[in-house]
Amino acid sequence: MLETGTQAPEFTLPDQNGEMKSLSDFKGQKVILYFYPKDMTSGCTKQACAFGELYPQFRERGAVVIGVSKDSVASHKRFEEKYGLPFTLLSDVEKTVIQAYDVWKEKKLYGKVSMGVVRTTYLIDENGVIVKAFGKVKAADNPAQMLGEI
Image (cartoon, rainbow, N blue to C red):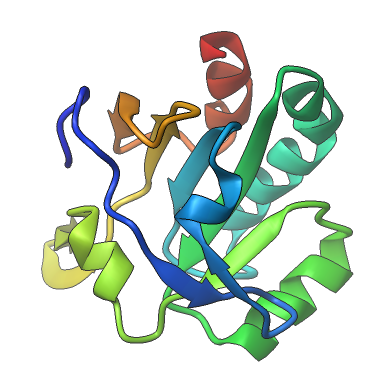
């Protein structure tokens, strides 16, 4: 996980509509950048839907929400449409941003070891500096937790 007080790594990735988005596009706004393992899974869906429900409150506080996973643009589009998600989902199939933000880790599930995205959320300020970093977050609680942080 990246340290607080450091400059957030710049990136450019396609969103759920295939449009390229960069972190610098959001300069002047707070950014909730959250990394999640997979579209349409129960924990990721709970987290995304809760961010969606709270999204108007994030916007009132000058923040945007951006979700990142290694799923394809098409998968993100289906996820957005099925659940009416009002925020940006970025596709990182090459895992370049996932690795830059240090969230690709060894995971253990039922004794089986594999590599995957560890659910992590960063709060980035208006100048692109990481002000909060939360690793191994609880999917359902994370959106309300982040709203409390801004």
